[in-house]
Image (cartoon, rainbow, N blue to C red; front, side):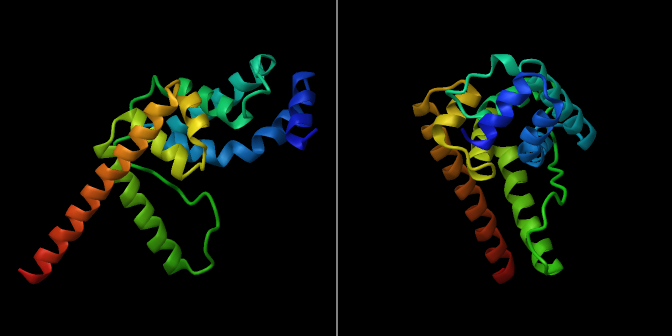
Length: 182
């Protein structure tokens, strides 16, 4: 039995400590995800708290045939769906990716620009699919479960999302070059 399975079993028996240990792994990722869907940091934190409360409350309904993370993200999507989508991305520093502050700022700026572009250009479901795939590293099958869509829909829309972003980013690069030479 994996440690996650053991924590789930203990949490199902009512252990708040086991549940806390279980969701600790997913908390930062869920918050990052919710920040892209919420109007403010406070709204994302509220949705995260609601997600964790609902997960604890309904843990008895969790089916171990599915990944726990998939079940948790599905709850998060349900909780944030009533919130207004974020107009801007507020990706705070949730991890220590680099010891070089300049490189960290450049990388954070590039990520922010990409996800801001994605937020403007893609539908909510396609944006969510892209986020789950490329930030949370979920499989296509898990994404289709989280979004309650078919695997085919997920694959097609991930491809369309990539093409849309590629065209948008290449347009920006072409515009920058023409300004530099013009």
